[in-house]
Each structure stands twice: as structure tokens, then as C-alpha cells.
Image (cartoon, rainbow, N blue to C red; front, side, top):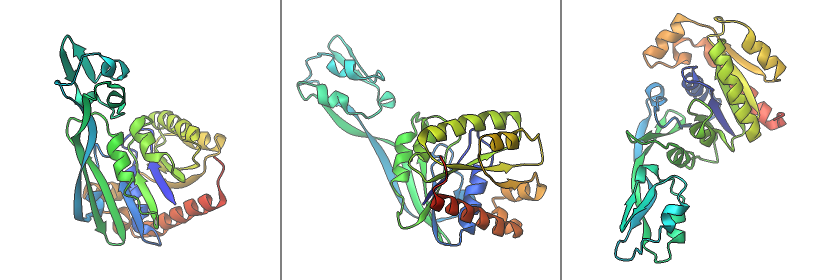
Length: 283
């Protein structure tokens, strides 16, 4: 089973839900922090890191001795990562999407691929939790290649919990697609509702069942609950706006450690999701 914890906007509490659910699970699980631009699950789990792997993506390299400046490589590149100016070929590795098209179309085999480092993956263990996260190199613009590398570390023998990036763009889609269940985290505010609708729309296009956690549930209004009822999205947990919870978060302490009564609730959340996946919830 693969559970993605996602949201339409940042700051809703995705990481809080992901790490506490992983720590409360009645079985050994794996947590993948796919928010590679700002990973923070490690701040709460404090894993012992035992392996660091640099991640590279292929980018074009031009052999000027073979190049005839036919411009076919530049013409096929949708992202303008190659430009031919007179008898000079310029490459822009940061704009390259590593599709390999330029290598295929070059009639002189003047285009080869070299690796460009985009970040690294760290693997570790926190108690019974297998932990993996990605760290993107500062200045990188495209996180999906690194997210896919993090997801490739999944252990199919264990339930995997993915802490996804916020939003509905390519990074979020790369993290949640081909998962069994998406747990949406939102807050009962106009911004929370607006971005929740966008996220639900994206998940339904992908055909993945979803449920909802309402964080800071006693602020704002009831419009999120009304939307969930109308859209037939189960509200699986509500977390109140509690100074003790906020204080624990600010000190990097798991919610279930600061307030032990919440451990059973997170375990129930995990079991409810597992039951939903087994039943084949409506998408």
C-alpha cells in the first residue's frame, strides 16, 4: 500500500500528519519525503542516515569536431536547451528535461549525454521506520527527476507513506501518481478550501481515492466540511488549533510524543485508510 499525504497549499500540516501516522502505524513502514525542495520530515524523526547517493540527470554534450550545425538538435528541443548560432552550439543544462531527443536526431552522432548533479538522496532509519528523502541542489528548477528517484527507493514489502510537495503542479503529481490513496490535508479557511478543490481535481484526474484531514479545525468556517460532504470525500481526522501541538512542532517533537492520547487516533487513521484501500474506495 502506498499512501500519499498531499495538500493544495503549503503550511497545512502535511509533514505533521505523515510523520505521526508513520510513527503510530501498527507495523513497520517506510516514509519517503518527496518534498525535495524543502525536506523536513527528518527534523521530527531524527533518522540515522546510513547512505547518501548523489543524483544526476543526463544533459547533452556536443562534439564540435563532428557537428555540422544542421540545427536538428535545436529544432527538436521544446525547452530551448540547445541553440545553434552560426557555427557555435550553445547548451543550457538547467533548461534541459533529459528527453534524449537531441541524441536521437543528430545525423553525425555529435551529441552525447553527460551527467549533471541535481541533488542527493539520503537513506536512514528511525526506530521501526525506514526513511528516505531527497535534497535538491540549490538553484535547481526541476524537482520531478529527483522525486522519481526518491520514489524508486520504495520497498514493496512495506506500506509506504509519501510526504508530497504542496500544490498541484508537476512536483506534486510526480509524488502522488500511481499511489493507492491520497490523504489531503487542509484548513477551514477560504485559501484552504480554494486550494483543496484544485488538489482534489488533480487527484480525481489521476483516478486515486482520497480522504481529508482538517487541521486547525476549530478556526475559520464550515465550508470545507460542506464541500467534503458534497464531493463525497470522507473526513478522516480533525485536529484542533492547540498551543500544545504548535509548541511540540516548533521544538521538532512528534505530536504523539507530546500528547500521547493522539497516538491511538493516528493509528485509527492509518487503519481507516488501509480499510478503504482494501475495499477499493470509489475514485
